[in-house]
Amino acid sequence: MALTDDTLQERLEEQFEELDLIITDANGELTVEVAAADYLEFCLALRDKPQFQMEQAVDLCGVDYLDYGKEANTPWIGQRYAVVLHLISYRLNERLRVRCFVEDDDFPVIPSVIEIWKSVNWYEREAFDLMGIIFDGHPDLRRILTDYGFVGHPLRKDFPMLGNVEMRYDEIKGRVIYEPVTIDERVNTPRVVRKDNRYV
Image 1 (cartoon, rainbow, N blue to C red):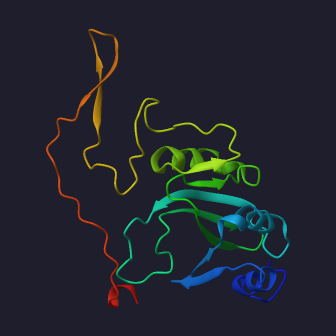
Image 2: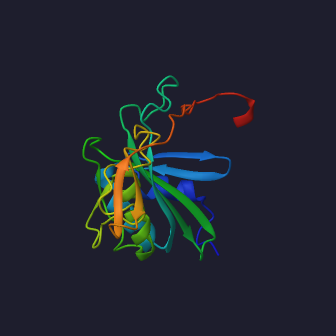
């Protein structure tokens, strides 16, 4: 049951008028873009304030925008990595997507929200492992899907399609060994921003 007749967007604009938020509503899904400096405080308010009550983080992922949208003059040109957080309020029956771009592309660091929502533990580890985003304050930030000796972050757009090395278990040596990649080269088609009737 909602505590107010105001929409979620109106409540966000009223409560956080001092923050430079970018709020978009596309296909009935509300997305809020917040600056990295305000990310932790903003997330804490979303959980604790009665007009939001976002008690559950259902997903967190890293996104590499690299060259995405540069021809379309999107507002995030020059910012490469973003963290996207999906929140839900069961009490108010509302969902919210929060996007935050990291400030430094060369060393992407953003505060961890694990003290706010414990459910992001493995999500943050996955984003660290596959995207290379460091979550400051995470108690156990280590690889979760790739091998401990793996070099690079495979979901970055500039990561080689074939990888750098391949691994296999060697029966004679009794351990995993790394060898140069033996797979044939593939062609990757970059993502293109389209403005046509399919997305209206």
